[in-house]
Each structure stands twice: as structure tokens, then as C-alpha cells.
Image 1 (cartoon, rainbow, N blue to C red):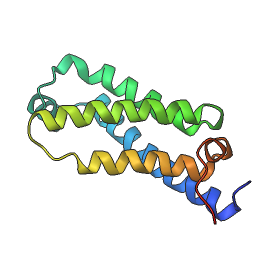
Image 2 (cartoon, rainbow, N blue to C red):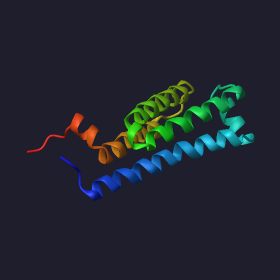
Image 3 (spheres, one colour):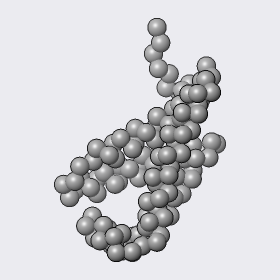
Length: 125
């Protein structure tokens, strides 16, 4: 069953906002600077990991936004978020925002993607 236009557009908006978070984070890593360097050190990550992480993050976000590869993108973003959660959890920081971001990744995709709704139908009376 195809979703209404409002549902699909809501999913697109959520997906774009989620992808924007990853794109901005990747761009900050590419730019570098004191704040990024201190943040990486705080997390126990080497400075040499900054650019590879940015490339991975940006690639996952782009793959997520392309309709033909969006499900693969959501899987990749989920893995990236999982790694970030472990990194933050290891040093005792909360991971609630990571969990919320992961939920939004899949919610946006679920609302905009008929293939996913067919695979995981919600129960209806």
C-alpha cells in the first residue's frame, strides 16, 4: 500500500535533516581545527583518523539520500552510529542522542520508502 504524499514528504524531511547532521559533522572533520582535534583526543581517537572518518560519514549520508541505495545507507549509518555509541559509552558519556538519531534514520526511511514498509508492515486493525 502506497503512503500518502504527506507521509512520504515527512519522511523526506526527516531523512534530509538526519543526513544534514552527518554531512555537517563530516565537514567539521574535514575542516579540522582546535575544537575537532580536542574532541577527537577526548574520545581517544588519533588525529590521523579524522579524514577517514569524515569520508565514511559523508559517504554513508550520500548513500542514504539516494533513493535507490537508501536502505543500504540506513544500514551503514546504523553501523556508524553504533561505533559512535561505543566510543562515547566507553568514556562514560551518554548515548541517548545517538539512539534518537538512529531511530530518526529509520523513521525517515520508513515513511518515504514503500519497499521498507512492505518488508516491515505495521499492524492494522
